[in-house]
Amino acid sequence: MAKNGRFLKKRKAEMLVYGYHSVVASLENPKRRVKNLIISDNLPESQIKDFYNKCDKIKILPKKEFEKIYGKFDNNQGVILETLNLEKVDLKSELQKTKKGNSSIIIMLDHIQDPQNIGSIIRSASLFDCKNIIVAKKNSPNLNSTILKSASGGAEVVNFISVVNLVRTIKEIKRHGFWVVGLDEKSDYKIDEFEMPKKCLLVIGSEHSGLRDLTKKSCDYLVSIKFRKNNKLKIDSLNVANATSIALYEYFKKIN
Image 1 (tube, rainbow, N blue to C red):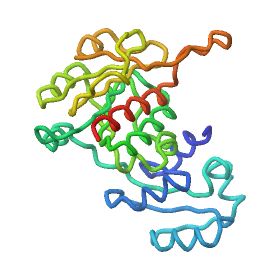
Image 2 (image 1 turned 90 degrees about the vertical axis):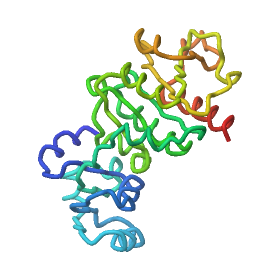
Image 3 (image 1 turned 180 degrees about the vertical axis):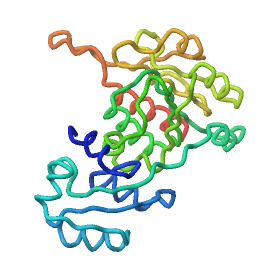
Image 4 (image 1 turned 30 degrees about the vertical axis):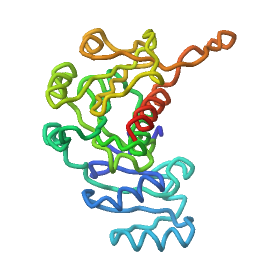
């Protein structure tokens, strides 16, 4: 949404959440510190009543004024939540929760920068019982309004953890009994034929360059997803968010 960057700078809130599902999920998250809920007066009465049941800090604006400040209704669905950022999650404490022998999956994103793809990955993670996503601080965006909108509420139940060095983090995660599985389209080992480890760190590279060499060398296994390329239309790869969803499904199906 083009206007996000502009009005994020204008407002004092640390984060603006927009879109009906994302806002409802944020309001239902007890860890969220809400400042204000701003809604357009053309919302259905049932939705307005529901928001009053969830929040006592509501401002209702005429639709024209709302759109002048926050952009078109179609993009934000007439709902904006001013909130403080969630507290940062410590990876070590999350790893300590994974008891020996229990199944657990963590996603690591290697140089994935598109916020809509990251949001879609968070949304999928929330549906397949993946509680943690790890990114590198230098090569990924911070959790922002676009990611939250694309995640459609998933960011309230999936931790988004930024680390300084992915390779060092992989070593740390391995010490907690995880096996590292990287998605690599050049691998002959197909994920649907692969026996997923119960404690799995799933590493995903960017659509254009895939896994970086150092990250790839840190993986215990490299697997690929079977599909048929469309040479006529020059469609020869999966969107990274779709590929991650398939990999999560394969883990979920085999472990459960």
